[in-house]
Image 1 (cartoon, rainbow, N blue to C red):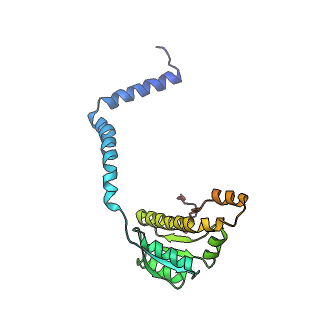
Image 2: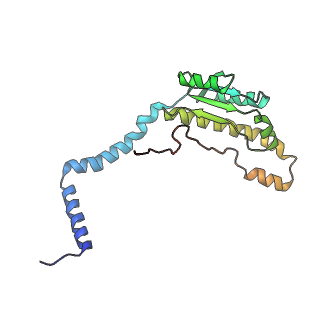
Length: 192
């Protein structure tokens, strides 16, 4: 008997397995039918899960007209509903622990100054990830509000800039999202 090379042995095994798979109707049904049925029905499973009016707490350390506009515009989005304004982060965190809110928006003391200076405005969004649709709704609504603030106030500040400054403002990102895992810093699982 002729000895086959390793590549020939592998190709023989692959052909034999494809023949075994193609003759089993159960396997074909799972591979072909399951893929198409799942692909078609996947969108329908999540269609009723459009999230609206996610309760969010606001910690406003800026106490400025711009931060009040941000809060008002955030409450006007269909995704979020302002539960209440907390005195500090700890109070908002307690509301989140008890399930009264699904997220916390934290506006720092220099929120308005940073926007009017043309710097990158910073706000923090803390959200539970026990329901990812809530997290996505909070992130998209807060980003949309920040883009609206960018569109409203950035052109006013651009009037006083030299041409080089206009180019820098035009190239700057209005939103820079950076996520931080609070408890699982590796964002993975360690095996012991």
